[in-house]
Length: 234
Image (cartoon, rainbow, N blue to C red; front, side):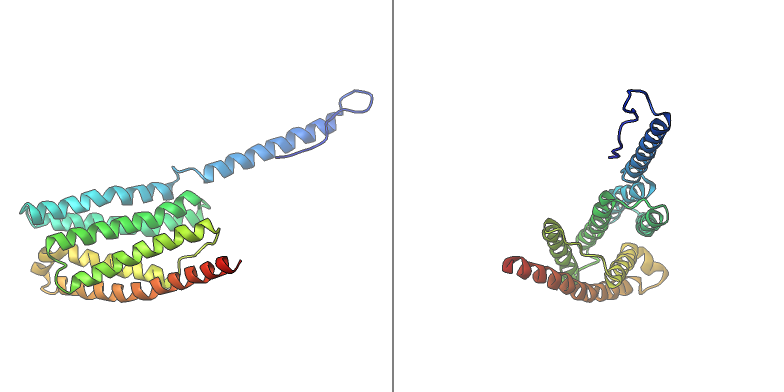
């Protein structure tokens, strides 16, 4: 809010210079408010890309379901892989455009990790139902899902304390390894027809991401415990 003294002189006449300054300041304040509101809009390109990533989830899951559960053609797996890759690319692009266009917002920071978790969790569950992830590999998927739940709970708790926990580079790499692993596993049998070890590479990367997940999850847990102890002592 801009507060200035009125443009009236003591004799009741109008000071034109003061009035002009008042109007100019009001225009500046309005422009800044409009710009700020625009930046916070939920319809910016970065947020639209995040929406697209969420919209891709039922398509990817539907393709794998139709191919595996309903005995559809193998090319459906390639469609799932293509859409999944496109969704993964939006994960990079939304953050990139938000930074260079200064369109970062609280809404975007909230929705972006949710979109990532929805994509990863949905694909892991579908791959488990498909049988690609089975046996001991199920434990890797369980570790990843439990970590996502743990981190989400800690973030919610720390947000109530007005404590921000930034995403580390290692956490970003962990997400990248997860996405690459899931991409290989989505190709599954169709990929094995091209290169016989596609599924095995996917499972190996899934275990690698699970180990990274344990480490990064411990970092978040340690930060949460630190602030919890401080809160109890306070």
